Length: 109
Length: 122
Image 1 (spheres, each protein chain N blue to C red):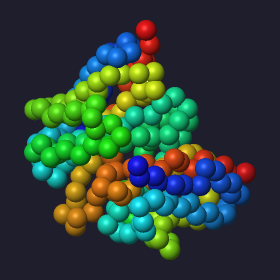
Image 2 (cartoon, chains in turn blue, yellow):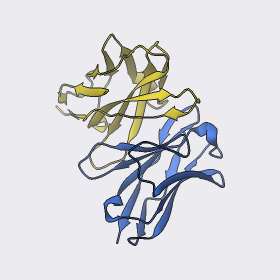
Image 3 (cartoon, rainbow over the protein chains, first blue to last red):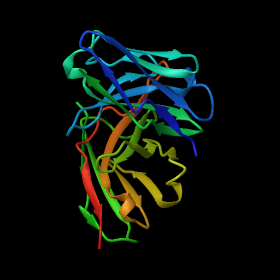
Image 4 (cartoon, rainbow over the protein chains, first blue to last red):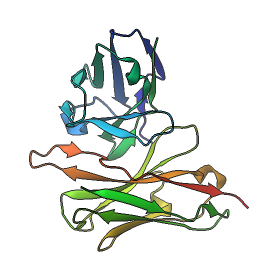
């Protein structure tokens, strides 16, 4: 069974920079894994942020960026705002199917 | 603007079959570049992709659920059928749309329905 791994939790200070990562158990994440990132705040439906590695939706703040980092997918937040406190999920096509990571709980403190 | 709305039974007995429907409005369901997804989230836990079907009937399923799941697409709705339900299947079930952009990019899971809670209990 394919497993996608994210950091369970990260803490960042307001105005700081943080990178979340996403790895696939079957091998390196590439552009062909089509990494997508979603944000979910408590009590809300998830919302798409980044598609196919580094493409932003029209509503995605400029401080969010996606990348590939040493065989993993990455989501970087630069100039973190208090409202960025949320759960972040990556979604990869790996092992022949779409698989969510377990989520990263980002705390802004 | 595309809108999705799930409807489900709320409560399902163990061993029974779940049927959930997602009503699609604001766009055509029948495009080969659109995929109609089901995702679930147990209370307090993470997201799990269940599967999807394209507007032209091409499907893909989570391997761990494949033997129990069927997704179908109709004129303005798509449906999820999951057999042999257990308490572990208690979750909010979401529908969403994914698409393949002209560039080949995969634009996954936008938008989402609001979700429907399904509880498996006797």
